[in-house]
Every structure is written in C-alpha cells, then in structure tokens.
Amino acid sequence: MTKPAKKKNKIIPIILGVLIIIGAVFGYTEYSYYSKHVDTDDAQIDGDISPVIARVSGYVKDINFEENTQVKQDQVLVTLDDSDYKIKLEQAQAGQVGANANVGVSQAQIVATAANTSTAKANIEAAKVKLELAKKDYDRYENLVKDGSITKQAFDQAKAQKETAQATYDAAVDQYNAAVKQVGTTQSQLSVSNSGVSQRQADVDFAKLQLSYTQIKAPATGIVSKKNVQKGQLVQAGQSLFSIVNENSIYVTANFKETQLEKIHSGQKVKIDVDAYPDQEIEGEVYNFSPITGAKGSLLPPDNATGNFVKVVQRVPVKIKITNKDKAVLDKLRPGMSVKVSVAI
Image (cartoon, rainbow, N blue to C red; front, side, top):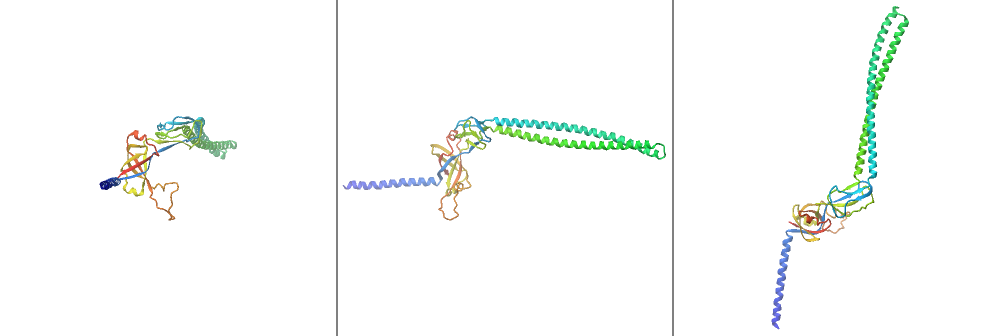
C-alpha cells in the first residue's frame, strides 16, 4: 500500500512543474509579444462613400444599374424625364434670337443717325455760306442807303435775306446737335441690347445645365449601394438616391486607448485581421491620427465641468492605410467590417 502512495506523490510535483513551465513559457511569449506590439479589436473597415444626389426635380425615366455592382465615374445611372427642361431651353434660345435681333436694329439705327449727322453737318456748311453772303449784301446796302444810292425797299430786302439766312443757319446747327444726341441715344440702346444678349446667353447656358442634370451620373468609380429610387418615382432636387463606395478608398479606422498612443506614430507597420476572413493576411501602415477623441466627436459629447464624473479611458481614432496591392483581397473588404489590428512598435 505504501508504493502506490509514493508513486502518486511523485506525479503531483511533475504535473505542477509542467504547469509552471507552460505558464512561464506563455507569460514570456505574451510579454515578448506585447512589448513589441500594440493591439486593439475596437476597429473596423472604412471607406470614402460618395452620395448620389438629384440636382433637379423630375420623374425617373430609366435606371441603368443594379445594386451592389461596379460602376464607372461619369456613367449615367439614372435618367429623369427631360421634357420640361427641353421646353425651357427652347424658350431661352428663342429669347436669345430676339435679343440678337434687337442688337441688329440698334446697329442699323446707329448707322442711320450717323448718316443724319453727316447731312446735318453739310446743311450747316451750306447755311453758313448763305449767311456770310447775306451779311455782305446787307453791309453793302447799308452804306448805299445812307447816301441815297439805293431805295429803302432794296435795303429792307437785304436785311430780310440776312435774317432769313441767320435763322436757317441756327436751325441747321440745332438739327446737327439733335442728330449728335440721337447717335448717343442709339449707342446707349445698343449697350442695353448687348446686355440683353448676355442675359439671354446666361439663360441658355442655365437651361442647358439644368437639362444636363436630368442625367444623373456616377461621381466616382466604385460599387453602388442599395438604391432608394424606383422607375416612375418623383424625385426632388437635393434628394439622396443611393451611395457609391469609392474604388481603392478602403482603409481601417482603429480606436486605440489614449494610453497606447505614446508608442504609436505614422509609418509603423500594422497587421490586420478581418473577422470575416481570419485566414487572410492583410498588411497596413499607420497613416494619421484624429484631432479629437471619439467621445468628443459624438453627437452628445460628455461634459465633465461639474466635477461629478467617472474617469474613463478615452479612445482616439487612428487611420490605417491598407498596403496590400492584391485587388482580390481589397474587393472582399466592405466598410463596417470588424477587424483586429496589431501595430509593430
């Protein structure tokens, strides 16, 4: 009976020794790992998501894509009924034609008034010659009537001719001044007509722009999310229809504890483990740090000004670029997927 007891007493120390060795090896392994790495499982896949928004109102005529499919930048995804916008463009173009016609009329009026100015100036010259001749006759008759060489009637006729020539000259001058003013007026009208042309051109450009908005295009290359629009539906300007996850914009947002940031800096290598693909090896690199903590950027940030608070370790979002170039790997990743990251320090 004593031999089995002695044998049993020897087994227990051996087991304890093995456990101690395993614990020591495990502890050393863990210490060695965490002394060279900073880990967190509070992380997820992120990406640039572009909303597709209607810029004009209208009824949906065609939908040219399927959900969860790849689309190219500037590809027409949705077409709205453009009948109203085509009519508005035609109206703007008709107004532009009328404005151009007004410019032609104003230019013709300038030519006509310029011709009238030339005629009025010639009339002044002719009236001036007649006035000078009448003045000379008057002066000559005035001297002759004093010595009785001519009759008083002849002198009166010379005086009347001088006054008539003076009145004709004054009228020609007035006509010339009026013609000059008319030229200025028609030039002002031409400026107004040119302004009208510019305005009508702006109306045409705006109508064309509005018409182009009836074709809703992809703002970026990527994968289309669930669509919130159906054929025949009335959409309003500014309404969000769906979103596109931009191609090659996938990255990781890891929320590290503030006590871990001392050992993390840009450029460090990162190992990324995706929960959905545990056997897939993904490598990354620390890119930059958020300027605020996650709690401070929330809708209702905490306010500890009252002094009645429990100190909680805050987390700071850190952006990690994925350095894998394998497109097959990147195509598997979706924004929102949970990951675990390990930063080599």
